[in-house]
Image (cartoon, rainbow, N blue to C red; front, side, top):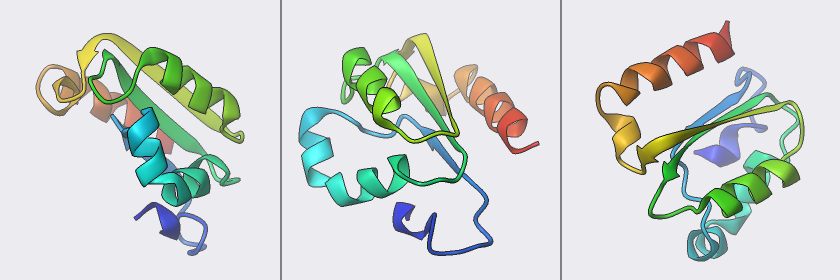
Length: 101
């Protein structure tokens, strides 16, 4: 899980597709979320503009708080689950591939 990001030297970065960053889920997963956003390792966050679990405001707030290096991509037309299926899953793959190369 996210707690391993800084625990292992072999982990070079972190990618997140539609990770839940809303108020309730942030409270439930606070320790995990804080470890991710405070990591000094590179991070890529991909979120849909119509995510039912995370508002655009919450996403932008977490990205403002997150430690650099970080990249954030907001896909305006996507909901939470849309990012898992074609054609947006292909976009996710391209973004992650660009991040790791």
